[in-house]
Length: 101
Image (cartoon, rainbow, N blue to C red; front, side):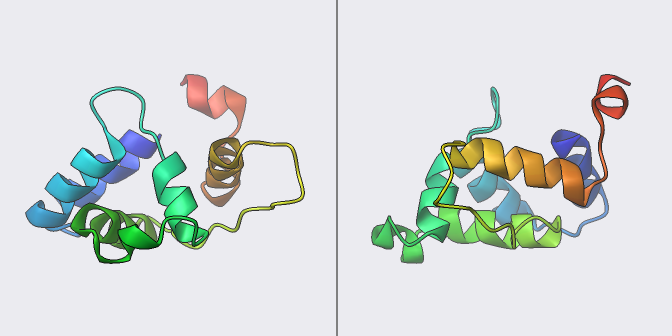
């Protein structure tokens, strides 16, 4: 579902080509997208990312897709990337049945 939302944003021109290239390189869309570095940067753990173009492009793309404002709970054993996908499912109102379709 994430790839479909992202592809739609690309097709409509909502995401610039430059942001798309930097986002894809930063997140690694060649396999399964990995958001852990983004999340750690969002939590302030990786200060060096504040001026990193790939990180900044990722922030812009995720905000455009409506998931840039996800909050992470530090008081749970649930990994932050799992929290991201759980909240993504809630934002887009996804169920397991819909994801299989």
